[in-house]
Image: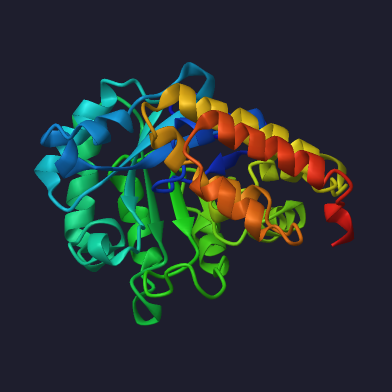
Length: 331
């Protein structure tokens, strides 16, 4: 798959942009486990042009992550253009426009998937951003607003005509949020359109090697973007890659392996973030790294309430000791 100067010579597996998830520490871990391309958290354009410090922190990229894209969202064309120029100064490999976020406070303001209800504005915004920056611009969107407005057929070609260099499609409507089943048939139809020349990346419900291969074989898309299935399971990239190459399903990581991963992730989070942020923002990951352990509630509660790094590390090592004989494969 080729996007601008990015050339991934194996089947591309991409980490989806996710708010409060795909920060630098999580991106680092996913890269370690084989993600071919990474994306930042959503960066709000209005916050960038108002110089909100936290939004600028989201623009920071480590070279080890590359190739990596910065994803922007907003409802004002001028603000989006200006924020794209700001983002470009941080030297991402691409700038991605978020036309897919279904969260109410974003969509109802006309940003994210809300832009699906104003196609002329969507196209004008996209074209303006493409013209304003030298960095390759891509788009991530959904099938449409709801089942009565599945308009991806109507917007794919016009989006391509604005000059974007790839299109990622989440196989749900905005109304579905993250519920129900992703419909990849429409993604496949866009890919098969002979007038579409840019890479088409599919997103939604890929959780392991078999589900990835089924989407590749059936719909012929150029790459797969994986979102929620990576939370607490960043090794999913390694497992999918192994399955695509060998047809073999790798065993689930042992408790020891999960503890080692959690320690590495936690140390990276502490290294990057000041104060207690590195502790607080790891809690969502801790709970999922050890999902499925029996009688885990007391340790889980301690893990999610401890504030001192040394205490947290001790709890992680306690998990390793107490559950060293537990086998995820038998569950």
